[in-house]
Image 1 (cartoon, helix red, strand yellow):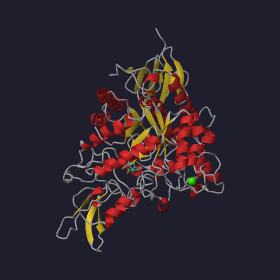
Image 2: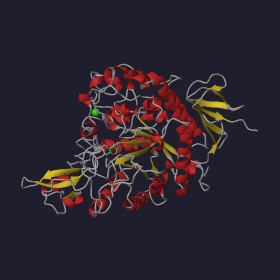
Image 3: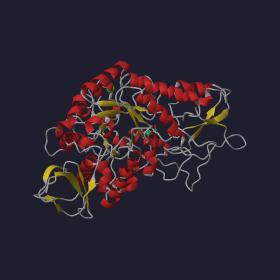
Image 4: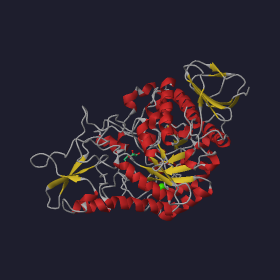
Length: 564
Ligand code: GLC
Ligand code: CA
């Protein structure tokens, strides 16, 4: 296994090589003013919880003014805070207090597209074809005798054509604009220097306010192939994880942007960083975003498309680590985020797969769902992830083994994917239901400061069973998933050999993934029939109770190997 020969000791290298970062989906984390939506003050009130969990950093999903067609990923002003979520002063206080608690803070930046309510897009609509206002976005004439056909065959990620025809100032149908996501999310034209300048200003605006870095939304999407050529494929439907190269994903031009951004990040004190959301494969393409003069991290989404199967997982881990070692970058493991079905449900189905385009319905019969098995596997997977070299991103609720909410009534679904797929894909609301903080339903299980707010009247309805997974119910319970995460993160801090650095595979049979880390630390994940612990080893942590010396199926253990 390749390692980084020149890697300095953990306290001497940039924090982002080792960090465990907690993703906060702001709308669903904590509601401080009782309106049923999470907010900045809600996050601030829960900083002690995050600190006690033991994470190194938090990443907050878009908190900017937004009409919320895609819950903040449709930004109308990049240098302010959504009034529903608070004020700029609240955000500044949160940044400061996060630092006081010894944690870093990342904000989400959305450079591929804005909201259609952004002043620039409104100006573009009002201006004439060919004007500088139109040039900030991607407007084209349609095809066909009267321009009635879209300019090319690109499909939106959420379904349907990626082009929308507008009505011009004279009241006639006119040009089309590109939106790779929702209709309300027009793509910026990154051929236009003004866009570059604007985003450089946005980066500095937040860096000046003390943020430690950025999560870059659709980081592989900003630059489109010259001439906007048709997708050449039997099925032109744009899948987020499509293996074929698309004329709108992963174009070489994006790397020039990141080289410029890196210079801005490096011009600030402290290890400011950026992490790419780039759904590209294979791993060698991801590594290109992590070249020494580009970004620090890129989510490693490979876990999301591997089966719950040791040989495949091991192959995937080797492939990613080898590709990243080529550029000297750490891995950034991910099992969950706000776009994918929660791991408790995915793993039960034997699939880690669950990208943004994947619904449970496509993966199996929901009635056969075995939550006990899903939870067992999710916990085992977490210990695997937290023992592997590099950093990890965990998504709010993952530490509670929160399952996917499958019972949201159709009339409460809010993801644009639902309508854009012509109601064939329920979308991503099921992993975005507000967190249960207390076991009793008062105040939507403690999510809301309004004690009278009922669980079904949080912005997305919480089911009656939600309290079973609450922080309150798990706090201090030695068997809970929350306790396991706290213990794992504490061990990760005290074991100098964890985080980035060397690992060595251990052969423990075909049904087991096992490897050691410096300090005689080892992680074993057993997928098959019960096996024995390595002779003489001391158990530091296990994802499920061991039976004497025996590791049951779907269980991971962290051990200290006996020396000699
Ligand atoms: C990213 C976000 C997703 C959003 C999309 C469009 O994939 O994670 O939630 O819908 O970009 O901004
Ligand atoms: Ca609120």
